[in-house]
Amino acid sequence: MKKTLVAAVAAFVLGLSQAQAADPVVSWRMPAAVPEGSFFYNNFMQRFADNTDRLTAGRVKIQPFGAGVVVPAFKVYESVQDGVVEAGHSTPSFLVNADPTNAIFASFPGGMGPEGTLTWLYEAGGEKLLQDFRKEKMGLHSMVVGVGTSEIFAHSNKPIRTVDDLKGLKYRTSGAWATVLKDSFGAVPTVVPPGEIYTLLQRKGVDAVEWATPSANMSEGFHEVAPYLILPGVHQPSFVWEVVVKQDTWNKVPDDLKSLITAAAKLTTYESLSHFAREDVKAMEVYRKTKVEIITLDDKSVGQLRAAGRQWALETASKRKAEGDATMSKVLDSYLGYQNELTANSSYLVRDGK
Image (cartoon, rainbow, N blue to C red; front, side, top):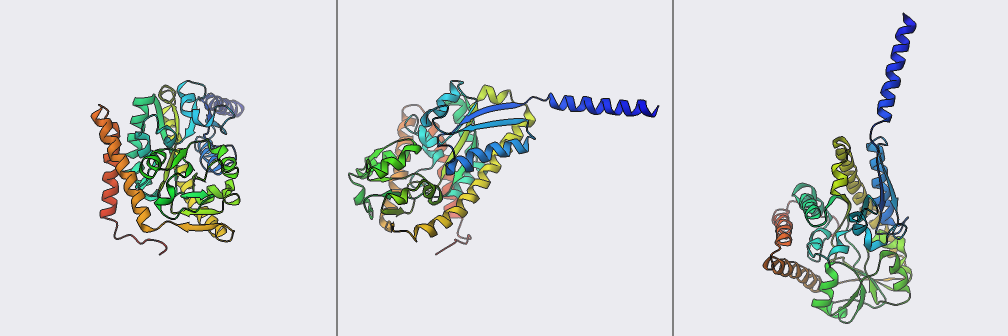
């Protein structure tokens, strides 16, 4: 009798284990728009893959790839749409030329910093607007996986002290800032993939580059080949990266795993933002000990840059609405609505630093 009971329990445990082992496993290949091993790759891509593996107890496996390994940096969204890969990690900034609505999600001159951006996305409907936009326009499901701190305005071979110094400046950038630079300040913007920026700056193929935050830029070594570092990052007060999968692919994921993958995405965003913030402070301390000259734009120039960015967003949204597409206006109204609310009601906050 005892042996029979033990055998029955053993059979039950074995059956349970087999049932668990038979649970569906989601397996995604996920290329990035940045090189493998880069600061963004490690803190967004790899962190998300690890968090997903841990939260799903291995039922979801995500294999990240650096830019160019599976698809080119600027082809991530397209590769997911075409079914070349199951998922992709990139930034809306790289889609601004296709649809300027992406600039509102990516951040733009005159936009909010990281805290405001994060709150708008998760608490004031921003991520839902992004998901609706991706589903309607591209047939994709989006999850925010990465909100960044303010960027460095430029690593430059020429000093930039006021907006007048932007006229004729050959400047590597992307997104809305490229248009604002050209149309409002007479600069000459050029767009190259992240992995090519260092060489372009080193060979003086451009006068200046912008890429990311102090810590991310330090890992790229831009300060080693350009004598000037320009602050503050008014052109990109924050930034947003996302993971996209085909909506049909997402619909087939079991509901419990959808919740866990979504939780892993949000966890990654919070973890990476705090990591960026800590590393940025350390990076600025190192920059100040190097031979680079750190230039801070005057208040007048910062105000002009912010105003030009907001004007671009408002005029572009209005034009598209007149042409029959009100999506950008809807997103911008939400974004500016929260930004105005934050500005009007944040006097209680203690600001760090001076």
